[in-house]
Amino acid sequence: MDHYDVIIVGAGPAGSTLARSLEDAGKNVLVIDKASFPRDKTCAGWVTPAVMESLDINPANYANGRTLQPIRRFRIGMMGQPAVENDHHGIVSYGIRRCEFDAFLLERVRSPKQLATPVKSIVRNNGHWVVNNQWQAPLLIGAGGHFCPVARQLGTGPGKHETVVAAKEVEFEMTPEQADACEARGDTPELWFCRDLKGYAWVFRKGNFLNIGLGREDNHRLTDHLEAFVDDMKHDGRIPADLPGRFKGHAYLLYAHADRPLVDDGVLLIGDAAGLAYTQSGEGIRPAIESALMAAEVILNATDFSAAALQRYGERIAERFGNRASEQAAGWELPEWLKQPVASTLMRSHWFTRKVVTEKWFLHQDVPTLKAVG
Image (cartoon, rainbow, N blue to C red; front, side, top):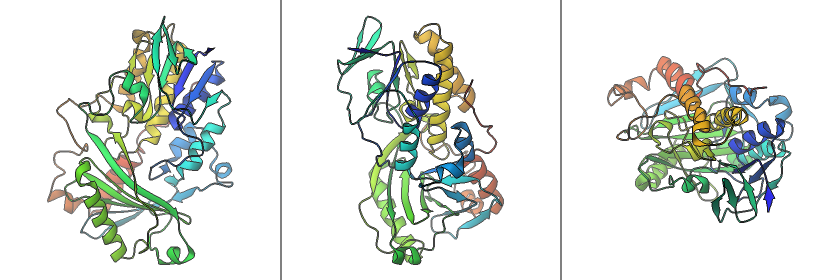
């Protein structure tokens, strides 16, 4: 049986970031993921300059052979109303393809990797975690997304008392004819809020690639809302009339409404496995990256891996993202005053859509960049 200091289950942005931080500090790390990389990942796919800085990525270098769409504007509206377009007069975010972005981060990890390897068993034995009867370590990290097997080990798997956001999206490379017919612009993602404020849809062009999707808190009506939105966008000429392939689904937890424990004896959850997606936007990449950086700092400073020793990680998460809401809270975290008909009026306001929706809820420009320690 192979022994490691840390086993990380999940090789996405959170797992890769943590692995790189720990290996740089001399830890013996193993990364396990059920998928081969590069792999498709259901996600609209944008990252802010803060994420690039936290990951120490030079945008010009990353763009060599990969999709990196500078974003300077946003087009925002409520479904059934005209959209408002705001120019931010500079790059405020980047569009990426997750198949490229996640593979890039994983390629920077030097530690051993077991890819295309499902986790079939996790056993606690004499203070160590044993995975698949092959690898063991005193510390096990859950970085495998909403359905992470490590989260299930903590008794926090799907079906618990949590509000789950479900989303569907499609991403494809447009033909020249489709690109000519698509009025959506690469530097201007479109965000369309559902009239009941229980979710939003997006149209996001990244060079010749187009990403269309919708996420809501009520999964049983997700397809109806998505089909209506796609029909409207086709009718208005925002997207091509012929969309290839099927929309793919995924699920995640909004931070304020998740109740997953973040640590236990010898175990710690990061990223979507911990339910850290921003409550107002559902964006999960920046919280995933930052949770990995905070976890690395706590792990490297811990004298042991007991729940008490790892609890500092939970405190850091609360300091960074705020305290979670009560168990009775549900749905998207929108202020009580933002209800119909007030919302309809505000969504036609340049000031509100720019300062509140874009810069505060989606870009988090008021939050300073988190850098790796050391």
